[in-house]
Structures are given as structure tokens and as C-alpha cells.
Image (cartoon, rainbow, N blue to C red; front, side, top):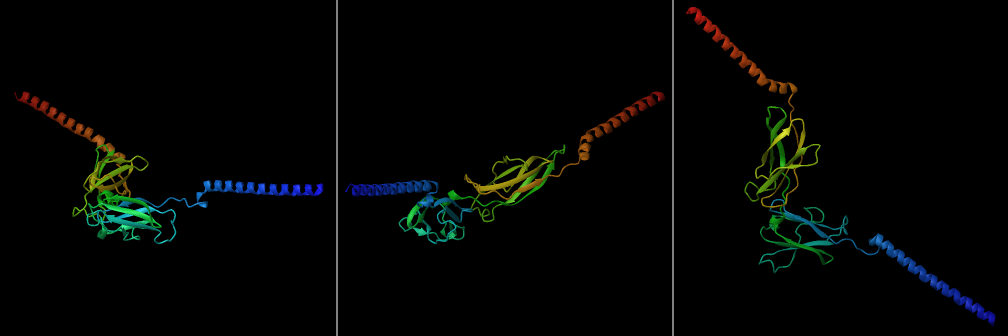
Length: 295
């Protein structure tokens, strides 16, 4: 009888140890899983950032587009997964329903394009992004507040003059307005900022904004090469558009012989005037002696 009790006791102890080991293993796996999720949260739950607006831009005050991030569906084709809705805050339309983006294609991936039929100035817009039926981001603006023109085109330069010393030169830089900006009819008024620097420098020199499409640049060294770029903005706005393509300026160098002639020219004139003065003095002396002989 004592032997059976001993065997029963040993069996119960073994089962308790096995159950305890199972609980320890489960807890350990749980802690490892939590640790793994902290390193890579996507393995546990979908914690990627929600789609958000990055910018809305109008290049010419006649159309505009809005762009957003979509990390969850980036590179995947899920039509309708993220949608943009808009409403214009006019008295007539404020009571209407939100309208969906008219064009998801023309402005590129994760964007909405509004052509001139959907663009009105001086009327605030409100837009919102929805994902799976819920709003994830929204903003309001007026079209004139988001104008950032395209870059100016056709940059060129002409030489104005070279200093007498042959060290510095002045140039005139010209360009054309962005092709899609209707500046001729005055629909949009642009001002331009020119920046320039030596090719091997990092700091740009900025000139004051101008309304014209040309500006003189003074005192450039003849032995240097320069980079020039221009950008524009709507007048009375703070947001510039992108810079134009780079314009490279390589000024013609004066020969050292030409420089020597420039410096010798005043001495040459002095010699000429000196000889002329000496001849006059000799003529006066000869003439005075001739007068004395006659008397």
C-alpha cells in the first residue's frame, strides 16, 4: 500500500512540473513576440502612418493640384482605397454634398488635379482625404494662397562692358516667364529673383526681386565662371516656385598685352604732349632770337 501511494505522488508531481513548464514557455514566447513587435510594429498590427496632404499648388492661378502620402498602398493598385473630396465654401454650395476628385491621373500618383472648369479664385476650398470610408486628413485654402509658378525659361546673357583695367565686367541676364502663366493679359503678375555665384562657391548672392524679365549683374571677374538661376512668385506672395535651369556665364578674358596697352596709354599721351610742348618752347626761342637780329 505504501508503494502505490509513493508511485501516485511521483506521477502527480511530474504532471505539475510539466504544466508549470508549459506556462513558462508561453510567457517567454509572449515576451519575445512583444519585443519583436517593438522592433517591427508591422508584424503585429498595421501601425503605418495614415495618408496626409503634402501640398496643394497652383502654377498659374487657373488650375491647381493637391498631393498626399499613402505609405500603406504605395506601389499597390487599390482603386478607391484613398479618395479626395472637396467643397467650395460659397453660399450656394455650402449646403451641397462633398464632391469627389475630378481627376486622379493628370498630376501623378497620389494626387488630384483640378482643371480650369473646377478652379475658382477668391472662393475658399475645403478638401478631405478618406480611407476605408473614414476621414484621415483635411484642410481649407483659397487658390490665390497656393500659387507657386513654374520656373522661368530661356535664360541668356549679353556682355554690357568691360572695365578699363580688364578685371571686371557687367552683364545683362534675360529670361521668359513660365509658358503657362498668362502675364500678357495681366491675369497673374509675377516678380522674379535672380541668384548667382561662382561655380566653385556654395553661397548664392541674391538680388532684389524685380517685375521685369531682365536684370544687370555688375562687377563679375573676368577670370571666373558663374552660375545663374531665376525663380518667380506671384506679386505680394511669399512662396516662390522652383528655380530655372542653370545658366553658365564664362566671361572672355583680356590678354595681358591688351592690359599693358591700357596702362601705357596715359604715358604715351604724356610723351606726345611733352614733345609738342618742347617744340613750342624751341619755336618761341628761335623766333625771339630772329626778332633780336632784325632789330
